[in-house]
Length: 227
Image 1 (tube, rainbow, N blue to C red):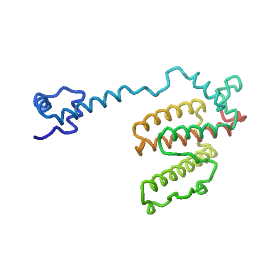
Image 2 (image 1 turned 135 degrees about the vertical axis):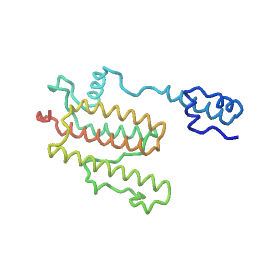
Image 3 (image 1 turned 60 degrees about the vertical axis):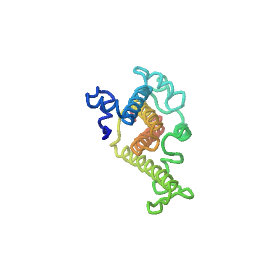
Image 4 (image 1 turned 180 degrees about the horizontal axis):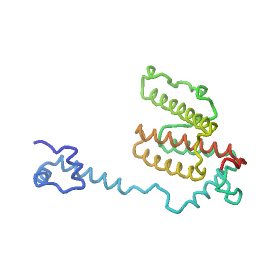
């Protein structure tokens, strides 16, 4: 007896089966179990919490940024605020340690955007050539090193872009808030698929942008022309 295809079962998650399909499901336990599992997975995914921040809750986000020392309150500067202390590095490191400790994404700890791209320290056992990869551990170390190189290179690119006057003039708090939202969303996605290369790529890109944004905020402290 020919079983129903995966495409047909996926369609039947939301649609009513034809008489022939209904007859087959009644007689085939395998297809019926697969359809039941697909429906349960769909319901489970639909019940996941919304990771987006509530609308109109930017005041709470600004208060959180102020409490973490990333920006000053609106009373301290004439607009949304600029970083008040160099503690942005500790905040970024705390984010990395939190994500790594929760098993979310690939480790990025140790990446310092101030270090030149070619000068990143190579830890013992790190594989830097694809031809030298012999095991999953080698591959994981190679990916982590490549991520560190990528974050450092992208950060330097943004610095040179800003020096050339080609960088974004978007409000800093609004940009950090948007990046925080993307980080939260990518973290939630990576809890479901921690080894997905696309999701990890999104996380690495967003993290690098957030890190560079915090560097810009720190560097622009006291510089009114930055606005």
